[in-house]
Image 1 (tube, rainbow, N blue to C red):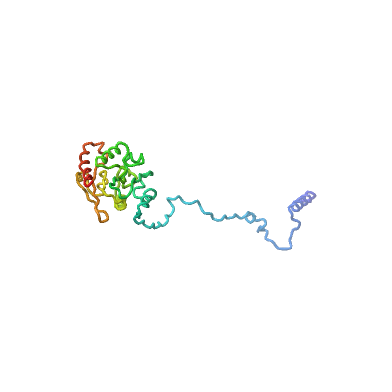
Image 2 (tube, rainbow, N blue to C red):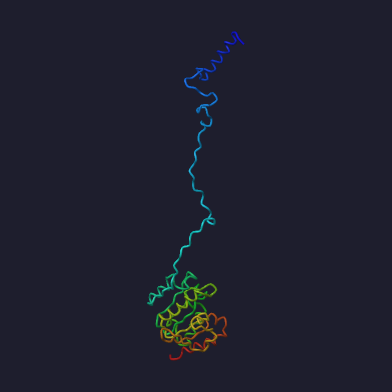
Length: 262
């Protein structure tokens, strides 16, 4: 190849290298032609990835979390009952510690005063009592008033109370609840100091004298209380007497014992 065409080709190549930035065949410093300079290294030009700091992951579901060590809860001691009459009545009305107060929101409180000539005591309110907000309401209450008149008493002269101030589900309780009510029974009697006691219903008979109602017919039961004895008789609940009139005779056999000494 030669002639003018070769000269033009050389000029063209030279112009191409000039456009590429090459203005000399040799440099002042030796260079390796097979080694790319760092500026032309693609890997070097590629931006380095940034590593985000580790973040806390989402919390594990409760079932997968390590359970915390159980905290020891101090055992509660026995409930302390107030020793003064007025404080005891206020405690029955408002305290959450009253045994049997947890069964219903509405409390049926005692009516009357201490040292009454006769205390009427049942285990807990009946369903009608809980609804009406007082003990011995409706037809059962009218029958009770007639029974009291038969022995020369009026309800207004008596101290009327239920051991538990609300009614348990199904009208039954046992275990620790029964044990707490047993403590309350004797403390209540100690403060009330009635001259005589009429137990009304089979449940309170079992609690107070550890006997079945059928075994108390016509018997004067002496309950020892604070070194003294309280003359006691037991009868079926008036609601039961209305449902089973044949039991009225047994109730009268016991009730008439309270006429003695009047």
